[in-house]
Length: 201
Image 1 (cartoon, helix red, strand yellow):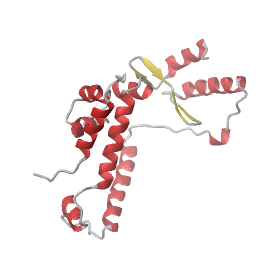
Image 2 (cartoon, one colour):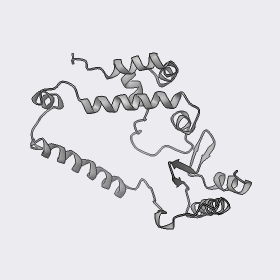
Image 3 (cartoon, helix red, strand yellow):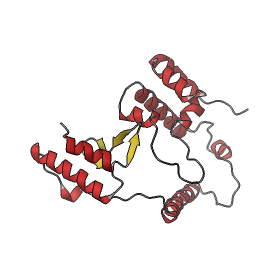
Image 4 (spheres, rainbow, N blue to C red):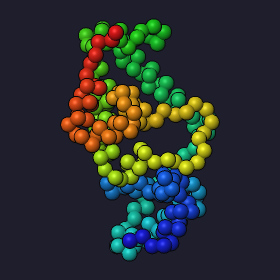
């Protein structure tokens, strides 16, 4: 069980708050990511984990422990954008299409002898199914989807929300989609309808 000291540390150094709840760790399988807005806070969180591990006789692997700093600096943004540009150039290279060619995606699909983008269809299906799974349970994933993140929004164009695709594909509001997801059969039919190929008008 968590002690009072650990809870105070979370409240003081948490990097993210959802609906007032401090989020200081993310777990996946046997990996744990600690989140803090300061180096001091991260060190305190690490000490709490170390203390708990020693009490439970669970050794920490120092060689697998890494620290990563995340920011919104212009240099970091340019680096990420260049990686996306390089990926797009590689796609054109594989298809043997010069980057100067004015070709639409639909035109390329016709050349390949298909109307449907199977990969995009699979992505839509998996994302919609995951959304339905999340909203049917009360857990951290649902809190991340529906919770309000504290702090001020950054400058510039508002980022696209993860749930925006859900609204666009199902033609429902997120609230309506969440209610529909409680009915598994009804939601399954809606997903099938949203991911079925339709001839462009």
